Length: 262
Ligand SMILES: O=C(O)C(=O)[C@@H](O)CO
Ligand SMILES: [Mg+2]
Image (tube, rainbow, N blue to C red; front, side, top):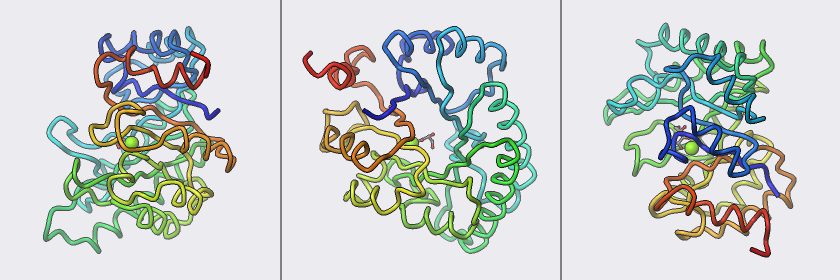
């Protein structure tokens, strides 16, 4: 069975953020991920991880003003200074939390934007970030995101992400393959995973339509999970979905997977 991490930005939101660590561990998770740690003290986060024996699997570099709709700053030529600061800050948090993977959002490119210039900036920023993370034994991840939820997101296909990874050419830059986004944009999930397996550092899941738990939509998750085992995927799977009702109810698929007779 693959290793599953609870995404604390989406699961257990019935609770204050710091209490979600305890809830994830009580539900049987051994790893957690979330969007951003920056409004919390590293000591408080580290204490929750330690008390619950949890691994911090992943979080994101700052991505601009999230509440205002920003989804990354890595492609903007006028924000390279801010980008570099965000790398330093993320590495500081990651070291304190023992976290080995950081995701870098790209940003959105409105119609008429200079895509060639943005790609150049993106490559330069990723090269800088991958270098800074390599010094700490960490991996940088990029994720293709569906443009229905995030219109104009710069990185919107697995092939484009693979091309960017090749252009940067850093061994610690890898792909975050989000099954939900890629079902919307591409379908053909397991052949795509097979093709890009050597690049995949992290997987995330949600069903579609709705971005709810496995079993609520069109994706055959038992097949996908078995497939990941069969092909030897050794990374984590982040449960990055919005529970259709309560988090506890939404975890029925997970209880079944752990104890198939239930
Ligand atoms: O939206 C997603 O999917 C994510 O993985 C977030 O971390 C933002 O990229
Ligand atoms: Mg994702």
